[in-house]
Amino acid sequence: MGDAYHHDRPALSRVEREISIETLVHASKLSVGKDEDLHHYLKRITHLTLNGNDKKAVKRMQNLYHCPNLKVLYMYDNEIEAIEGLDRVCQMTHLHLQNNLIAKMEQLDSLTLLEKLYLEGNRIERLEGLGNCVALQELHLSNQHLSPASTFSFEPSSIQALSRSLRVLNLASCRVTSLQALGFLRGLQILDLSKNLITGLEDVFSLVGSLSSLVELDLSQNPVTTQPKYREKVITFSSPKLALLDKKDIDANQRRMMQSHLAHKFR
Image (cartoon, rainbow, N blue to C red):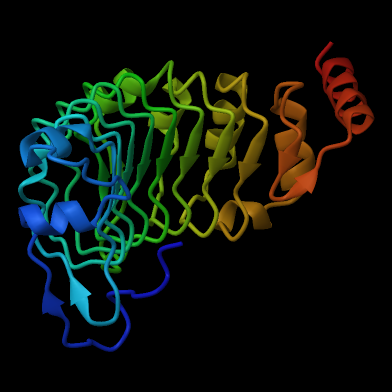
């Protein structure tokens, strides 16, 4: 999903697709009932598919308030530059905005029921604007298109809001350098940090020690992985739940031996 068009490919001249009432009707799979009032029909819509294609692209998120019971919105592969128009769709649980031109995580305050947010392939360099998204379970932010001078950062209030609910976080290829904020995401089970700029082995030890629910961690293609005995050391400091490191299984017996050796060493 979401690979039909990508904004880093040679520019295609696409017609702007305006989100009108008619567009909303066509974007839903619901049938209009016989003699049903249009306003009533729009209120029944829970899913909308407004992803772009080779010929047309949405550039503005508008008129979504006509569908106040919207739960799932597909708007990937478009040319959207700003997240907007969501303040009256408070029932949203799934939002797909991957492969757009979005530079800032904003206007998400009303989405208190949001469970899954997809923002891969945009221009975002800061995790922010999620202070009210206390039900969010999955956040997908991989492959942000950032300048070589940029590094990814984290808003403390958003991290705090997600500390209990977030289970999956994908930050692959986002120019992440610091892991400090991520240690507060105590509920994390899957964390993808591959293809970043992480260098500090002590930071990795601290992270795996803090995230006791973590099952999968991917740090492949980071400078830190070239350090001597990187894998053995990370496994030693990890919790028993960590089962997959850099896409390779962790042997439970191997972990016990390493941890026993470490304990013996410091007696």
